[in-house]
Length: 327
Image (cartoon, rainbow, N blue to C red; front, side, top):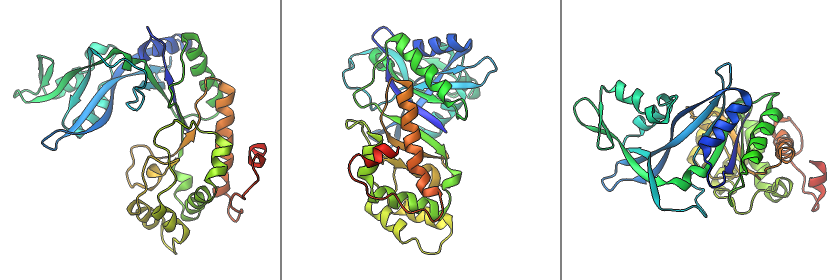
């Protein structure tokens, strides 16, 4: 499983300084790259693909420990005046994804080198052109305050989960980080156990019937954005799936309106070629206390376990407070 922890560095710090502080703790190094996010389309219908500054920390053995990225939903309370030409953009989603993968460099200033070399291109007036002069990537101004936003994305974790959580949050405490008003903790679990009709339908039906109990147990941030129950048609498909194969069931859920912005994001389970082959639990509260984060994860995993045990009754309706004592 992997984690996404949403933090806000104090004034005078950024996700770059956070990455460097983490690298010092593990005696590793920092690399700089791009994080793609979409902001709709241009007037002529082409996509507007923004590429914000990303950093990642590599351990001594070269393995990635964490990647630190911007989150464009976290802007409340941050100054809006553009101050730095550190944001890049392109109108080609494929190029944006290519840059996200290939743009890692030891220096922030050389992130474009791999793409420039690939196209035998050149830079002029803040724009990267290919060898024939066609514009590929433009540089844009963005507020310096946006660099305070720090979503810490871990590598896949196993027995070292507690160690990595403590490392991240101790570093956050050292820098004086706070929580954004909309902060959330997202946990990504391997999709494979959920690629089973019985298990996935039980999870959907369980959450749909007892969402209030899930929320009492997990206590998500009420200000967190993009949380919601499953769409009604998704629940109807899960309630009566029929005798079908998993690919058919998955396609039916997708057609019924399954989407990312739910308490549980199923897209990594049901899409044929997902970017992240995971079940994402989004309805988790973020905390600066490592033990609180670890207990939240254990509580979520007990709820998820109901759907993975054959013939186990679905989560029973409990009086207020009963479920909390169980988890």
